[in-house]
Amino acid sequence: MSDLPILVNKSDGVVSALLRSLRAEMAFGHKPDTLYVEHLVALASLRVASMDRAQPSTASHGCLGRRTLARVRDYIDAHMKSDISLSDLATIAGMAADTFARRFKATTGRAPYAYVIEERVRRAESLLRESELPISVIAFHCGFSSQSHFTSTFGRLRGMTPRVYRAHFSPES
Image (cartoon, rainbow, N blue to C red; front, side):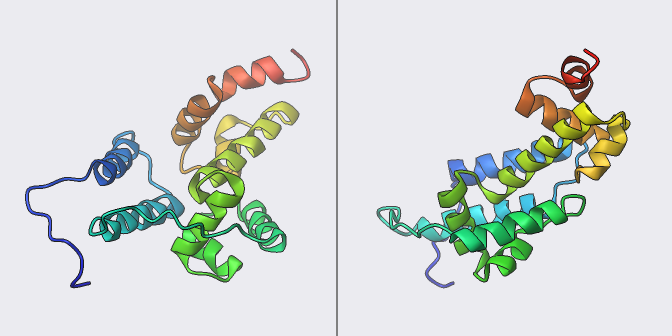
């Protein structure tokens, strides 16, 4: 810890962007998922730790094994409704959270939080097409903190609201 640089009246663009992202989520009244906050803290910590190095590390940390990835995906699928944490996923994989996050991204092309959100939206798409459940119930079943959070996330990722998606892709249309 004594090796960390002391920054006085300085800022880091990456850390600032991460904190702005968290602030924006909270400004919309969304309660951030534990996975999101843990991932943000891990990224900020890695950034601060690397500030003292002249060159950022480009060493490859490898990918997750096929079985490990399957266990993690099964866990995400089984716990979609709940607040999934980065530490939970890392425990399933049997590694430290920062190592897991790097290897997960190397394997899937997405950070764990982004992957979980994408899986929640995919499940929501299926429920919107195949059921007549109210959108608020679908939001809950897919692990979103509110219907508003679900609607804004769905809109950002799919370019339309859940209601428009349902109207466009339901079997009756």
